[in-house]
Length: 194
Image (cartoon, rainbow, N blue to C red; front, side, top):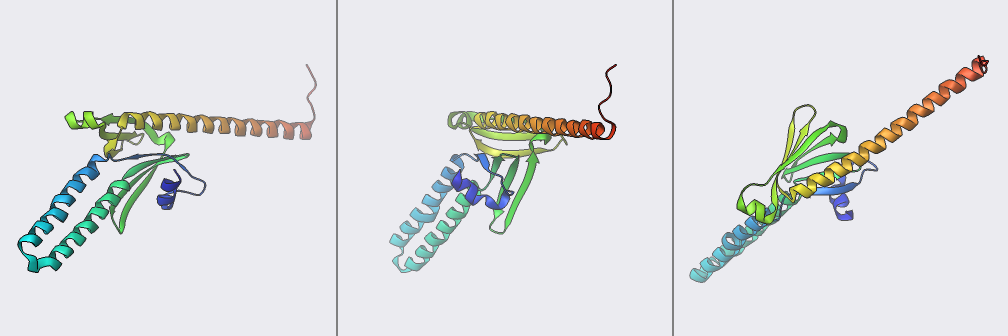
């Protein structure tokens, strides 16, 4: 979690810590890696063997494809739901200079649903997750890794947080009542027994 807290620190409030992060499945990177291997590395090497004078074009092609590959990996990693000790943060990375982030309080979550599609989704255990909000909006994380486990973890953290808030609110209410009674007694004295 230290690594995630470090990478996502710009999305966290002071004192907030990531407990769990729901990411897209590694199969997304596998698709990018296959394209990179064939179109970005093997194809330029084959073309270089066929046309040796174009060596520098091949080197440029490979370099450019590696930049796109790194961009794809970063884009994959930074599309996540960050479940923190106080809320859920939906992070979307749309480019180097374009990031989206929205915070959802645990009390605003109505439901969390997940869906695995097709044979590949069932075998590799990935699918789409949707978070339904009290307002009626939905936040979706496509191709989430292990959506059932992620849903259970989110519900568990949500229940712990809401229980803690309830206990805190009870303690605050109790202290307010003690202060009111104390003030009444100091102003009026103890009422006689009847």
